[in-house]
Length: 216
Image (cartoon, rainbow, N blue to C red; front, side, top):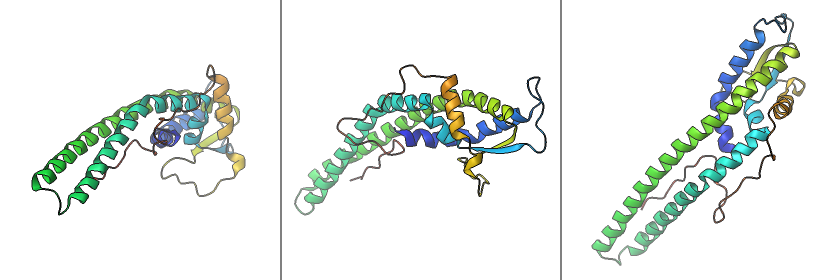
């Protein structure tokens, strides 16, 4: 688990968050009149905003620490599978059929165990990430809603959304950092965001918890 993983998951929720924010920003309210047709258009990188908040950084560190032992277990299983593959290659023309069958069966058992544990890790990490995105996203919609209404925006586009139609926009209309700053002010994190913890014996995992074993 690392920041890229939470950013990938944030992309799944980004479009929905922006739709809600834009609709709310265009709805008349007692606090502010409906924006005129000449109102401004703004751009925000929702994925970047969620991950850049102090709360988002803290959540990334906590999730990485939570799932690191299981990730390490998968990496160790993968190493055992690769070791068996090498032993089988070295056995060619030298070992008995019984020994080859024993190593093959052991490799198949480990591979099945790896696949099961890997699927479980993906399901659990996706669920945990979904909770984080939902928690931060709902509050960020409120921050974005207030910002858009107070600054006269009639439309807000998400530059990080999948299949977004934006071909060009000036950095002057991008207020991502403003939303991050306002979010951190509205929802401060006690003690700040701790540095991510990494497994001692392994490098940081890739953008997903999947490790592809080399099957014997």
